[in-house]
Image (cartoon, rainbow, N blue to C red):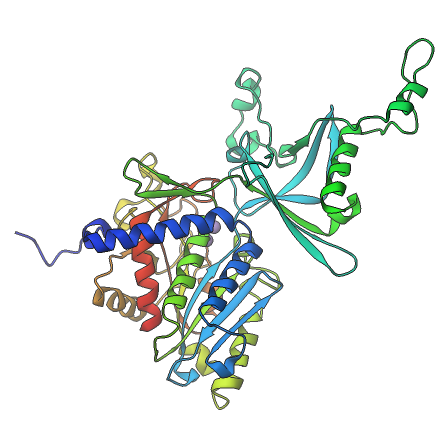
Length: 475
Ligand code: MN
Ligand code: MN
């Protein structure tokens, strides 16, 4: 006999076992795979989100009941007006569009032993060894002095070349393999191989430089770094740029290729940048699906940049951008509202992924309070580390409110902590929202291999989290 006093997490596979649910689940997964396969930088993600919102009729003009504003192409705020005045609070979902990667240094190009390479500075928390000896694509933005800029992608189309960082062969890695992992891989050795063919000297010039003894002399037409010079020539032919233009650029090296289904059952998705683009995708999907439906509270989606490096900067969660947008909404929809009331009465989701219990490393987790893949969106009342430092802590009342929102629609969920106490930890944007006095809790699918080039999520969690975000916006 079932003990109905006891709490047990619910599996999404049991909750969503109808043919209709399974079909919708697969349909959502296919669209999600297409999204993460193409949107690999924050600006590509914001461009996609803007396009989706525009198609759904979300405009920049608040007079029409919707609002959308971006900043520097890297952060986005979108709103749909509710029937209640703004000082009754918003229903806000915040996710982040930036992901760990390798950024080109501002002066990246050099040549070493006949190899043309690019120096990098990693962005966010990466495990360096995961980025070696694999195909990388370049997603870049180059700004010109005249104020214009262009973007490019190299290495995603099967016809494109890819790029890579060479790793040491095991035969000669004896000394390296004895070092602690944190010392074994040096950031300054994470240099991306761009080419190795030297620039051909012009026919007549090479003849002129050949002495009677047949020995070639250095002529003024033989560049000092012929491979680097060749790379510069190819870049110039393709993009009409010179080396100095790279100093005003943002070039990101990311894992090349599309996301894939994983497993004989196709039940998982493997791909780069799922933290936190899975929440970006689901938040935008939820807003777009509800855009025609009347709602009580004004619904807001905010997509931030720079979460992976501490939410700093103009486009990060610590910036004033969200405030400017809320003031715009107040001016248009509730001129009498007080800003503090709007913010304090807001209920928010910090939509971010959580760590799934790893079957090979269960010892870094605490089983009772860990997220299980396939058991629905994982929620954290608090994040932080070592005695709950640097976390906002949702109230018990707010956790109860969220439970009710999800249970009403029989959506599986799990309340979790990331890892064992004193075993590391991490933060999200929740605390920056909590600073306004609003209620906020972390919620998102759980992920295996988080921050790696091939993060793993469950198709069932994708589906359940989609339902959870919709239920929350409607609450
Ligand atoms: Mn995240
Ligand atoms: Mn992260």
